[in-house]
Amino acid sequence: MSLENKRVVLAASRKTNEMSTLIERQKGTPIVRSLQGTVFLNDEQVREDLKNIIQQDFDWMIFTTGIGTNTILNLAEEMDIKKSILQKIEESNLGARGYKTVAALKKIGVIPQAKDNDGTIKGLVEVLKEYDFHEKNVLVQLHGENAPTLISFLEKAGAKVIEILPYKHVAPKVETVELFCEELLTDKIDAVCFTAAIQVRALFKYSKEQGIFQEVIDAFTTHTVAVAVGKVTAEALYDEGIQRIVQPEIERMGAMVLELSKYYERSENNSQSN
Image 1 (cartoon, one colour):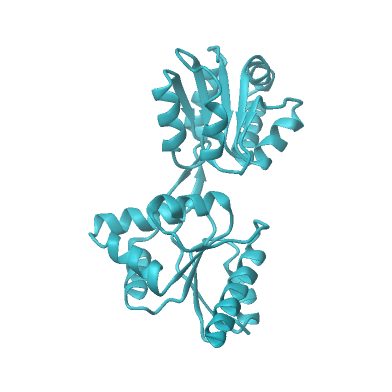
Image 2: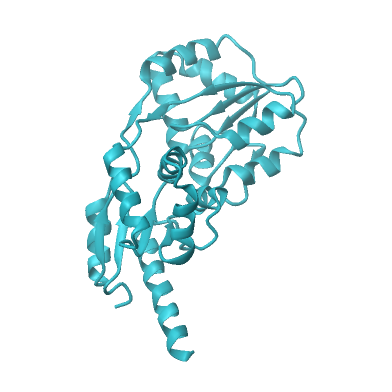
């Protein structure tokens, strides 16, 4: 098996048992080092935001996650203002990032004017460049963290941006990130499976604070393989400067583990042929 004698870190905080089993089936050794803190619903703040939203008019509403879009609609229904929110959505131009977001909007009978072609925020920004945002009121739905690329683009284009965050992330345990970095920098990790961009950002935020950013980059360049579950996570890795990224065509955790196994298999075959 191609993961034999490989120590594979799981940076996720959920479904780690299932992923560990998949790695073990490939004869690898799974190590859980969650680089993602707990995600919790930012309930009270979102309720206040929704009350304010129905009092305003928007030229654009941009949604970045399906779960965030559904959460807003569910909360609006609880507050008995869903009809007003739906009206605001119908009256606005719409932007959407990701197929799950498009599906959530389709459920309420609307189709976004602008949507990405690759599932990433950068892809959405490229499409939005075709539109005029000067002095436009734009609502942006975020998920647990901000999207600096999107917000920066809109503000530079002259938009008046209002953000709504249905979920917030709690930082991972410092001792976990510390242990992970120690193992990474002493070549005790062969691969790291990242399942969300927030895990990547948490790692590099810590590495920059501790002055070991370049050492972490070097580790991923030489010994340790970075694995991304999908395009958004891969985008976060590229943004930090990691060039070697293993990524499955199908954005699923099982496919990610199999793609890593295939990567090592190809590497071993190349070594033998040389």
